Length: 360
Image (cartoon, rainbow, N blue to C red; front, top):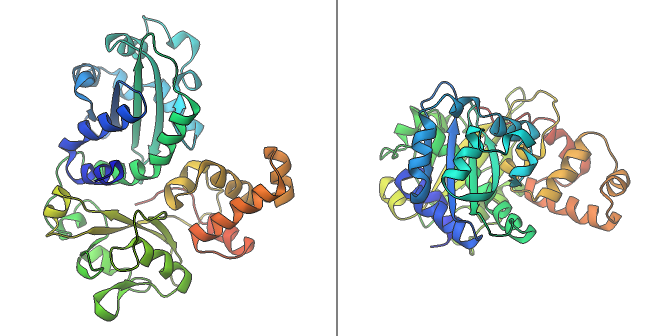
């Protein structure tokens, strides 16, 4: 199993988060890692490597858990990857009198990177990784590796937040209770079961020959089949979050294909993948880089180009603004088309302007 597989397993089996965060930390030269789910409507929810659990537990018992200006500042930045804490901590927050810096001192850390994932109902999931005093800062290469895991962490934290970091109950019907339309697919790509919420999307998702799940748009269906278990899947799919237009008057949806590994597969009767649906509202608002990366597995550069396009800039203007060659922007655009199932700029912009963020 890869670290990506283990991320998805932890989404359903939260006691595995500590080991998964530890593995990610090890690969990137960090000494600790944490997942914090922050929302005033919820009790403090967190997971972390064993060496910082006591610090997280103490912190969760203070009012600073919810106030947390650095975390809220990072959230407002809408940064589409992991950022070193100098980018979201104020200078006066980096001293021993500050509770957030005090946490760093307690675990002996000098460097920290963080990334926020916005949730459908307003919660935020904060991922952090720390490095001990006396070591160098995180390198650009290490940040890039973490950024590559971020779409997987985003999908897994969506489920972890809905499950409130509790172990999933063994049926897709139980996913109704937490508001997730879901179905389970076996290793041959056959639909095993679907809950009532999922069945509401029969206009765009339906079982076809041999029990496979299909959609009516040919290009979107190609992306779906590549993401689903079965004969077309070869290795790790590049795209696991796929936009789908619905009938006129209905909001578009995003379909997430989430692997079920080991313990997670056992929970759902040996299924190989869960297909979960989130919506996005058609408001005409411009999407943020963060939302685009979470929805469509775009790289940071691709998300930036997509955001610029949806704000009305031309390809030439984007190249000038970003200080890159016109050919580079066109390469990014081709990748965006492929990952979103669109083929023209007008079609892409219409799709992107339908996105304001995750909404349950």
